[in-house]
Image (cartoon, helix red, strand yellow):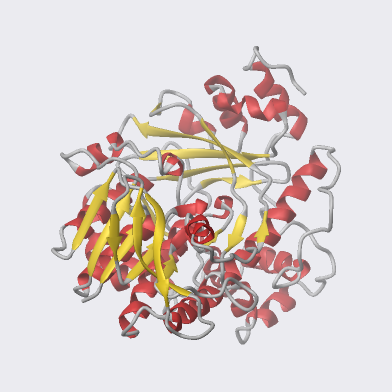
Amino acid sequence: MASTVIAGGGTAGLALALALGARGHRVRVLERSGPPPQGPLVKSAELWERPGVPQAGHDHILNALGVRTLRTHAPAVLDAALAEGARLADLTAAAPPGPAEPGDEDLVTLLVRRSVLDLVLHRAASALPSVTVSHRTTVAGVLTAPTGLRGAGVRVTGVVTDGGGRIPAALVVDASGRRAASRSWLAAAGVPAAADPTGPSRLHAFGRFYRLRDPYGPPPGPLNRANAAGGIWDHYSAVLHPADNETFAITFGALPGDRAMAALRTPAAFTAACRLSPYLAPWVDGGAAQPLGPVRAVAMPANVLRGAGPGGQRPVAGLLRAGDAACVTDPMFGRGLSLALAHAFRLADLIGEHGAPDERLGLAAADLADRLLRPWYELGVHDSRSRTERWRAAAGAPPVPGSGPPPPPVSGPLRTAALATAATDRAVWRGITRIGASLATPCEVFAEPGFLARVRAASPDTSSDTAPDTPVPGGPRPPSYAALRRAIAAHAPDRKEG
C-alpha cells in the first residue's frame, strides 16, 4: 500500500489514521504537541498537554451523527470510550408522548470530554501495525513535482518538517485544524489559493469543568434538554453538558466587547451567573460539584468552508484536507466534532475507492465536502449572524454593519412554528431533533412527507418570525440582560460595568 502522511493528530487526523490503518495503508501522523503520558486512560487524558489543540480544554458535544459514525466505522472506539466512563444520553427522554419509530435508536449523544475521546482514538490508531504517530513534529511545507499533464500544475509528493526532514508520501492530508496549514504550504510552493467562503461568529464563550462530589447520588438538577441543562436565551446562552466520569461543563455564550459579561472569567462572577440562569443553580450550589480548573474564555472562530464546490480551490493531486482544515462551523452549535469524525471516515472510504491519489480523488473529496459539509456551513453562517443580531438588539447595540444574515435553508417563520409544534407533536419533535443532531439537514426534514403538513396544521399562522433557537414558552425564564450584568459586575470588583 502507498504511504500517507497526515499533518495533525487531533480528532480528524487520528480518525483518518485509524480508518486507513485498518485497511492496511501505511500511515504516518505528524503532530506538533507532545505525546500523552502513559497510565490509566482517563488520568492520562487529563494530564495530556496539547498547546496545539487549545480547544480540547473546552466543552465539546459528540452528537448523534458522531455516535452513528463510530457505531458504523469504529465500534471498538465507542466501546472503549464507554468502558472509560463515557455515557450515551437518550434524546427521546425529552420527547413528547408518542410511539417510538425506527431510527429513534440513533437519537443519542455521547457524554465525553474531548481529551478522553481523542486519547481513545490515539491508542486505537497507534495500536495498528501500519500506523506511526510522531509527536513534536510540525509540517512546515510540502514537496511537489510536475504532474506530467499539460496545464495540470503540480502534485504533492511529501512533506518537509520543521526540523528540515523530507518525508515522501503518495498522499498528504492536512488535518491541522482551523488554521488549515495547507494554504501556506501551497502558497510557498507557488500554487495560488482561492478565497474561502467565510461567515464570522462574533460571539465569545466562557466555560468551566466540574466534577460531582457524590458519584453515586442523583443528579443535582434536571436535564431539561435530555443531554443538557440550561437554555439559549434572547440575550445570552448558559448550557450545562454532562461528560464522562461524573464531570460536566457549563458554558456561557455572550457578545464580545461587553465589559460586564467579560467578567465571567472571574470564578465568583461565573458562579453568580450560574445561580441566576435557569436549571444551573443546583449544580453549583450546596457543594454539589468541585471545579476542575479555571474559567476558560474563547472567541468563537468563523464558519469557513475550504476549497469545496464550484469556484473553490482547484484540487491539487496528492493533497486532501480533513476535519476543521476542510470546514469550520460555529462551535456554539456543537457540530464540529461529529462532522470531523464523519468527514474523516468518509474520506477514508474515498481513498480506498480510488487507486491513485490523483486529481480525480481531489475532485471526489471536493464533492464530498460539498454534500456533507456545505449544508452545515451555510446553516452555521445564518444562525451565527441571526443569534448575534438578536443578542445585540437585546443589549441595545447597533446592528452589525453590512447586510443581514443570509437566507435560511427553511424560512424563519416555518422553523419557529416547527419548534413550537415539536413541544407536543412527537413526529415533529423527531424531525427537529434530527436537525439538531446533524442527522438530517433542515431542507431534508422539511421536505419529508407529512412533516410540513403537521407543522401547518398545528400552527396555521407562519407569518411571524422569532429566533430559530428561542425556547418554547413555559418553564423558568432567564434574568433580564440588565439583571445579569449587575450580578456579574457585583462579583468582579476590579472591573467597571460598561
